[in-house]
Image (cartoon, rainbow, N blue to C red; front, side, top):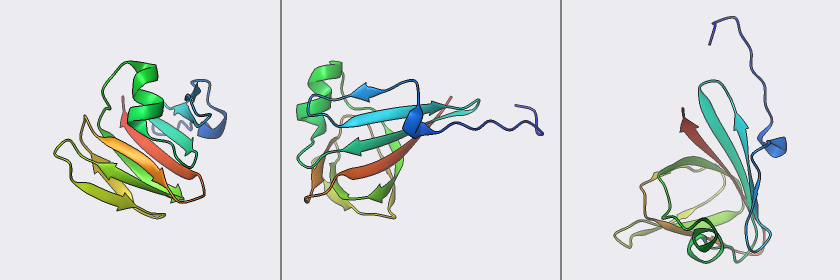
Length: 113
């Protein structure tokens, strides 16, 4: 990308929208050097229940940031960590994650091209 170029996309209105089995959704902004996803995961959402069966894949590595709500991330070894608003995180592949509490969890994730 040219240093003087500006690219603006809003992940809330991304063209690459995925709606999960429970109605949770994830949109992606496709920038020249990175994808930025914004997920709104409803209370009770769980990767292994609502996303994995739909995609037919194992979970991928994620680098992200929790905007609101809370989620538990469980790595491939079974270690669990609660992610809260303001937490930046990186978790390896083959993990699980689920929303805790009564409000949706809004999370951003970042993937270089």
